[in-house]
Image (cartoon, one colour):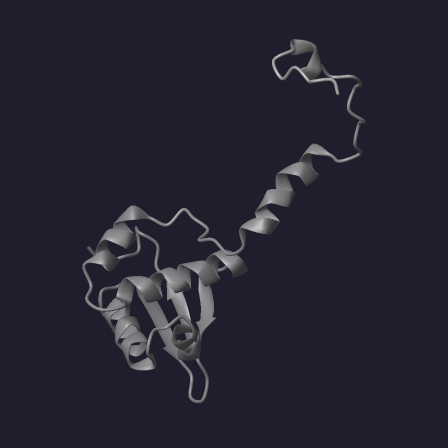
Length: 130
């Protein structure tokens, strides 16, 4: 039985050119994003985050959930249901308080419609009250 020499440099030489693929550069850039799953689309203004971080409870978490929905829909106003917070492990009571705190601090505007969820508008940094 012949013994392979692992350290022989000719062992690692390429024998043929790799076959060209018909994949465009745009397709190569898009493919990794499909595997990533959900992500927070920015930019999220730092002053907005700083102001939300100072609020008690789950205000920052709910704010980030709203930013996520805004990034997905590419709109500043999104429909937010308290059940979505419950699915993320935040009680509806804590989510309701967080929405009230974000609204009172001037980070969001909320339109409440009877029998429906909330229409929440994220206020940009220049619109937020200091």
